[in-house]
Amino acid sequence: MASPAVPGYSPGFKKPPAMLRLKRKRLRRCEPAAPANPRCGAAPRVPSAPARRNPFSSLDNAPRAGGAPQTVERARPPPPAGGDPLVAPFWQLLEPVGEVEPPRRAEPSETMDILALTHDLHLPVAVPEIPSAPRHEFPADWSIKTRLLFVSSHPFTWAEHLKAQEEAQGFAQHCRATEINLPQSVQEPKLSTELRCAFQQSLVYWLHPSLPWLQLFPRIGADRKIVGKASPWSQDETLQQVLMSDWSVSFTSLYNLLKAKLCPYFYVCTYQFTVLFRAAGLAGSDVITAVISPTTRGLREAMRNEGIEFSLPLVEEHRTRKQKNSEVNLETEVANSLEVGNSMEDGEQPAPSDDDDDESFSWLEEMGVQDKVKKPDAISIKLHKEKHEVQMDHKPESLALVKGTNTFTLLNFLINCKSLVAVAGPQTGLPPTLLSPVAFRGGTMQTLKARSINAKARVHLVYEDRFSLEVVGPVMPHSLHALTMLLGSAQRGAFSAVLYTHEPTAVFNTNLDSASPALNKETAYKDLPMYGLHPKTLDQLRQCPTLGKSSIRSLEMKDYAYTWKS
Image (cartoon, rainbow, N blue to C red):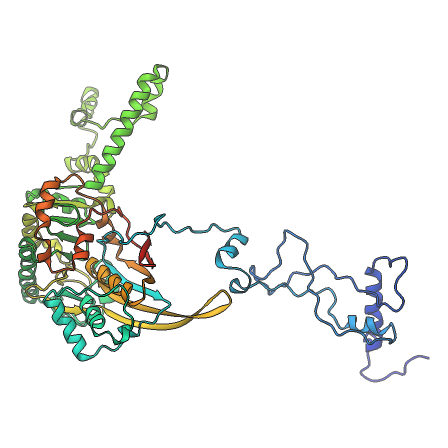
């Protein structure tokens, strides 16, 4: 009997029972042949259709294409016992056909550690470059750190909310260069007044000039942080002269302290380069040294014109290594006489001589066209000769070393150097920043900013308390060593640290004076205690640098022994 015509009724629509029958028919078509003796009353299992790609999935949760997609069966209620066998297909019809839930990506903390997860994803694992055996002391790091982050399983509550008396005592200990020797392990760090005072003492440094509304370190690449700040001297030449005159007095005072063995080292930070002055007896040298990085051809030429004798240690080292390689290649070529014809292709080309440059245009005169061809001027020829020297500008390889009495000439050169101060931009007229571990004329006492943070970290399916201490500011070598000594006692010889380096100063860790006479070194070491630093800190700073052009990036202490990564 035909259905009566009902307004709004479309014969294309199907009622729910018809849809169920249609789905059941499709499932039976895809169903494989049944086994020979199926169990009576067993519900036929619907095979899983091939999984379609979810258009909203990402690469992280999408199933891998390498293997067959595995279906994830949902937990479904069991069919009623003893019921009609047709009930079982009804439960299966409730499942979406042809759609498979993509497998969840296992969390690293639930099933595997980070290294295992990285291995499963076929990614290279970064292996820390640490010494094979822990040491009781880490090498001296002459770079300036901008931030330190210490992490430990023990709290840093002892570094919080220092009392006024403890803060004042820490300042007094710093000014008097008081040596503090803590026990290997402090039982109650929060109640140890000596520990809290020593912590305040290790945070002190000296700065010039002092402009509280400006961040005076770092100076290289600091235009964005200074732009928009008040700088009344930028348009006032008289004020600029007053600032530079005051800066010259402070700079001279620091050098005199260095020469009198009352200051171990200090930094001069300009908007283009940084200078590190080190006293005799430090970094394996028996004389005063000054290292400048990065330099340019113009700066080096100006220093030569002022009579300052300096060397480029990294360039000379590269040249020596290249010369040794050339000698080895030459010996090989002589031994293998059959390959003499290819020697000029494989070996180093000889440097052109000045005579060749002078006679390079003689062929023009022979042709009679010397007046018709424009020859390069002397300046262009000179720049062409110095192209290799220009290529290393603003790079770590441009490090310049000044030794002995030439450092005093460098002092006068920097005081009178017009390019020492920016003439345009946010740093116009602003004198360079002076950083020192000891007091000097015109210097202002400053402290590094420290704060402690408490958090929880998941370790092996368990959340554990993690405590961190953040130190921000220009962290100089003596401060880094003093803080690590304090933390070793307060954190029971177990902590880790991440060190953020001011990159232009990382090259200061290069060994520049490995051939100094041992007798002169012993003479220079006699007066080291007058520098006002802890004896262990001095023992570290007087060693020859071993980090090269890199610096310490991470440091870890375990059982009072250090491991580090550079």
